Length: 144
Image (cartoon, helix red, strand yellow):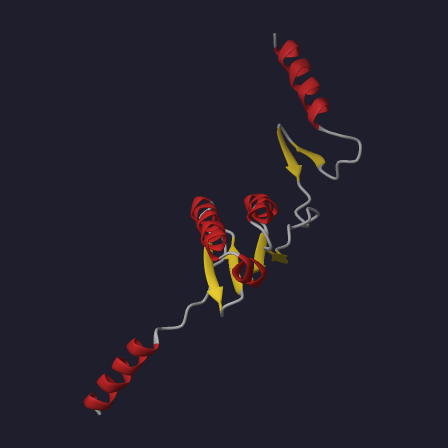
């Protein structure tokens, strides 16, 4: 019976050990140890910042597909659609916002011409509104 179990164990060990595997099997007495290569041989995925231009509502399809992949920050030029049809622009922005919310990302406007959309691991920096900053300055001056 012990020989049968040893035979099964050896077959499983052979199946999971490949020829190019850098793991070494070290036997010490009755115990077996496996030494693993912990040097980061795997490539980490990089974040891509990608520009887009919306000239028509249909142009958001590529943006949505790219955002759903999860590793792209989209910089979207909305000026051509804004100049052409403001109602279509609002519709496109709403669709982008819904997708951003669905993936746990963030969306914000930069000036009148650009929108930035980030995946879930990033957020857009937002400064405090001017009115709130003025109130904080008044409070600081009153305390001094």
